Image 1 (cartoon, rainbow, N blue to C red):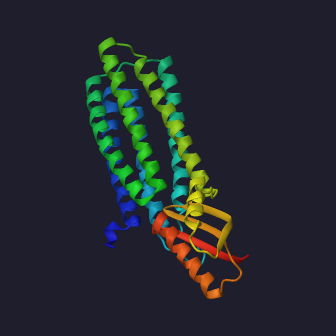
Image 2: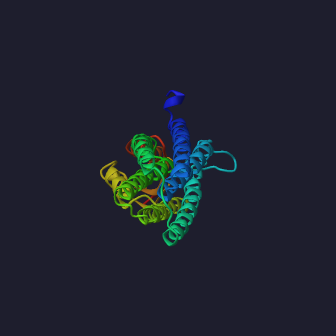
Image 3: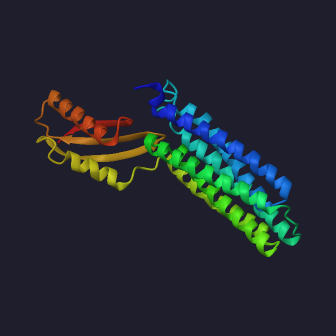
Length: 292
């Protein structure tokens, strides 16, 4: 397989593209926020700034996660992706709470927005770029089974929402002259950011805590073993987890005690191969055989 097509390489490239794009959007929004004095555009800029930090973290941690197993990390470094998700969630939440405070301050002391049409233009441009980026990141997250890229795509979904809210608020401000629309829009964006951080933190924590695969995964294994070999009497102690893009499955296979050692080994290897073919090449299957 070409190095460019390997999942680990694709993850790093996708995270780097996302970080570069987020940096350009942050600079554009920050410049317009200074020109117009719009808190909604500033909120969108802060959201993009968190995207820069998160995508940069992704690029770094995905490089760590791509390292092969070593003497100290026999199961590899896949959990670096989940660790990245935890740090991202904290960064996003801090930005969100800061924006809530800023929005409440502006509600108490409203300020005029200068040239709101410039803010509308940058919001529309950012919206189009974010839509393209989300489509790309979601495709790469599915292709590489990456939690970090899925979290990254979620950031840019919030970016789409923030751009929409900022644009609508500025259009309303321009048409109706309601000064409270701008800070209220920033608070709505901030709440959305905080909720998003909570969802990312939950998913990352589940992986760090070795949450098992959905019940359907065990049901699939059960169906595969049914009628697999006449000597198989079932299984027990099924366990599973996921670390980065790697799935770990292990259980004890019950084999008739009359089967020879060579036959038991042959059945076990065939079962491992069948499970890996179903779940993909990035699946580690460990089976112990028990005579019954």
